[in-house]
Length: 194
Image 1: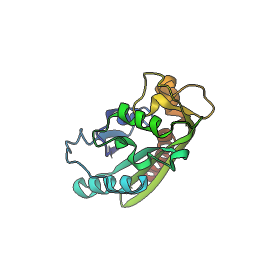
Image 2: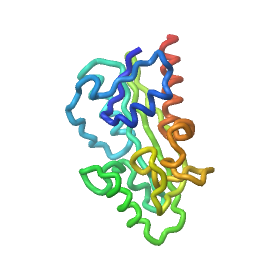
Image 3: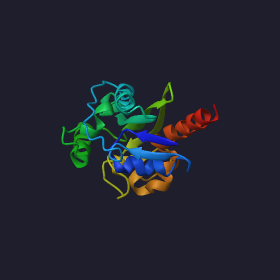
């Protein structure tokens, strides 16, 4: 089965490819040569995931899904949230984003946070929306070299290390995208059986 993941982010595609069953051929927007910028104009992760998935479905008519993920920090009323990738500006610079988070959290000890990932899925003539979530805290020191985005400063609940220290193997078991992907796999299996 061919499934389009509406992203150009090679890290995300690699992460999900490791989790999906062997009979799912996952293609990115780069793979299908879709280079049009899909504007994420939604005010929630749910809206942005739907916007991207709907665009691919309408333009290419293919089974697809899109995700929107974000870091939500309790002390910042859920920010950066839907603006996680561009929290410090449209240049989408990971280091700038981390520095802005630290600046906003100045004086707050052990700030609670969560990573949340929302998938909007088009399969056949059906649509699904699923989410994965992992709780944790923010570190005020960057640790680890694996992962991307906020991984060097996010310590998942029950662990002493950041996502960037824990590495892909653990992240792919406990992470927000991994949890959403498990639900996606259930939907794909159900869809294949009907």
